[in-house]
Image (tube, rainbow, N blue to C red; front, side, top):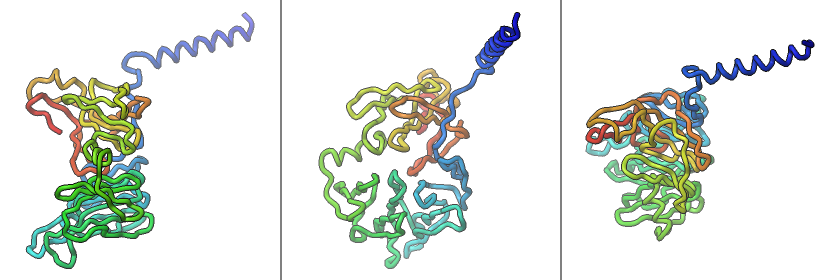
Amino acid sequence: MTSRGATVLALVVLVITVGLAAGCGADAPGPAAATGVAWADGDRIRLASGAERRVDGEVLWFAETTAGVAYLPATQGGSTDGGDPLGSPLLLDDGRGDPLELAADASAPVASPDGRWLAWNELDTEQRQVRLDLVLYDVTTGERSRPFPPDTGLRATRLTDTVAYVTTFDEVLVLDLATGASRPARGAARDVLDVAALSSPDGRWRTDVRGEAAGVVSADGDPVELDLPGPELLRPRWIDDDTVVGVVPDVPTEELATGETTGADLVACDVPAGTCGVVPGTRDRTILLPDTEEPTQVSASGPSGYED
């Protein structure tokens, strides 16, 4: 055999050996890891970049903005004239020193998807009574405004990059973030709030929840196939225009006995590609996703003990 022939044979053997080793049972790779998903646990915030921030107190709410991480810690803010606490301080941490206090008494904060705008309710600092004002804050300029008269029962329930959907006692208003002008929500504009938890920020996709499990469909109802690393997607939530996250259990919930629990992972899926990956560090934990005040329990259990 010529030296060239021996070299080719050796390369073929090497390729076959490596291929077999990569595909052997226990050595086969597991589910792909998802990157770019932010979450919080206790006093720790894991940023989309993978960096971590430690804060003073348990995190009750957070959002990444263009100027840093805005968050509510579980420390008492100011109080009413009767001594009752209301809300928590709203802080903005740019990672370069002590965080900036945006409000001493903030509640119900929301953020725009592009990270420019924040809105929250805060205690009237002059009256010191249970009287909440809606505050709008532009992170890029540092300007804040109170677009409505005080004590009108208004709350910003959702922000897009251009408008805020504001609820009153009996109606929904659409507030233009740039001009401060508002108008009553009608038709499709009002429908945005009805499906806010189920639709992507740009409205192109939504989760189709049937029973406990969920799928993803387009605005026209066309299904999107998700390559999940498990049997089903539970408790879905959109974190940007084309990323949905949810809990994927090891065992289908319908196969669990009453009250029985099973392990699970937080999984992020790209839409419409359908590729999914496990968010590292979230298995079997209770975490907080961006711009929500309701923790997500990364687990599943049988019918009577099912927990959201």
